[in-house]
Each structure stands twice: as C-alpha cells, then as structure tokens.
Image 1: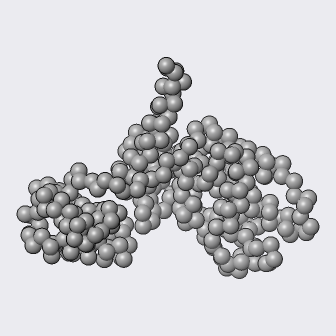
Image 2: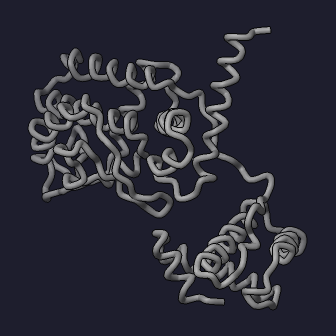
Image 3: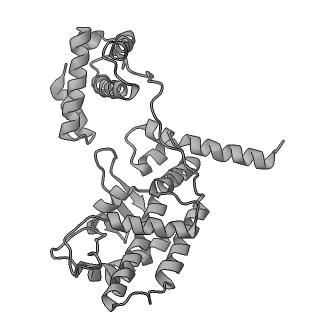
Length: 315
C-alpha cells in the first residue's frame, strides 16, 4: 500500500487529519484480508470483501459504504498516477444507503419573493413598539437587518449555514461582485457571483449594521456576520449564529407555510442550478466534492418535470 502518496492525495482533497487516519485504517484492513498487491486487485476482490463485511462482521450498508469510499479514493489515486490500469471500485454501489432527503422545493421566483417579503415585513415595516427599552429595539433591528443579508446569500448563492458562519470581510469583493465561500471537511471552496440587487444590501450592512453589532463584542472579529448578546447581556464574544437561524427560520415560517428549513432552500437553489447550468457547474457552485452528491438533487428536478407533464397533459 502506497500510504505516503495516499495521504498526500487525501490532503489535496481537503480531508481532515482524523478522516485521513480513518481512511488509511479501512484500506489497510482490506489489504490485510485480500493479501494481494495493489496492481493485482480486481473488481471481484472488492465485491468479495464487501460481502465478507456483510456476512462475517455484520456491518450495515452505511458502514460498508465507508469502506468502499476509502477504497475508491485509494484506487483513484493509484489510477491517476498511472500505478494501476483501472479503478476496481468503479461503478460499484451499495444498495440501501439512505439518500439525501427530497424537499418540496421553491422556484427561483418563490425564493426571491421570500427574500422581498422578509425585508418588507421584518426590516422596513417591522413594528417594535412591544420592546420596553430602546437597547432592545436597537438589537432587534440590527438582528433583523443582518438576517436579511444572511437570507439573501442563502437564497442567491445556495450556501449552507455552516459556510455562512465562516465568511470573512476579505471574502467579499464588491468591485468584481464576487463572494468567496470557504471549503470545509465535506465541501470544496468556490467563488460565486453576487447579484446586482445584493450589492446595495451588502454596502448598507457593512457601513451601518455591522459596526454597531461589533460594538457589542469584547474582541475584534473579522467574520462578516456577528452574533448579538442575549437580551439580558450587554456584550458578547460569541461567534455562533445558532439563535440567529432559529429566529430567522421562525419568521420565514410566518411568511410562507411551505418553508421548512434552510436545507430546503439550498436544495431548491441546487435544483435550479442543475436545470439551468447542468450537473458539472451545479457541482462547482454547490461545493460538492463528488458528482454523486449533486446527482442526489436530480430527483427534485424529475419531480418538477412530472408536475409539468401532468399540467400540460393531464390524461
């Protein structure tokens, strides 16, 4: 086993140290069982090993799938470096793996309307007379203005809430109208265009909202989006936005009963990308490492097609 090269390959793909160790462990178990050299491994060897994991070690499909992924990474690395003639894991799939949840997706027009309605109801025309103290009113207004921009990025750039948390000031390029999304353990970094309607919202936030939120922080912070202290606290050094997403989600549910969560929003955006740009570009924009991750959203696109057929040809 070419452990050194495999480690370098996984590092280039952005895998964490613990994930790399886990993958190496799974591959080493495979070679300890089959007792063959890399170049002599065939597809029947892989299938036989997966069957062994099922019958003798009683592993569930999800656990066996992790072994298959580790092997697929390893033989992809060998194939790309010309050390094997083919990847023996190619086209092998384990049935019964839980797939990504399908959602009742929003159309691009519905997502735009969701953003517009939030801004109108919770930013421009929100009634905050129920707050007893002016500081509470100020924090509420800052929170809602910040959340309006968060929602705009979720809707237009299709990012996850985890990726929202990692955006820093330097990741925004207003001159080129681009935003950099940082990769993570399960996603690739990418640069996505901003829409013209977002530029003014971002400028207003940077000039008028974020500086005021920063005043509540005890330390300097380079994150684009900052947390606000609880109502009974005067300051914070927290970088977590969990409460922000809870409030935003609850508010969106009052606007549109179809809204479930932010994963539904991302699924809607990715489905639209697949339809308009194709699978490969959608994969890049979504930050997916593997095409199979993007293909999970094809079913949403198929459901749309079925609906269109039923509308046009009901019989």
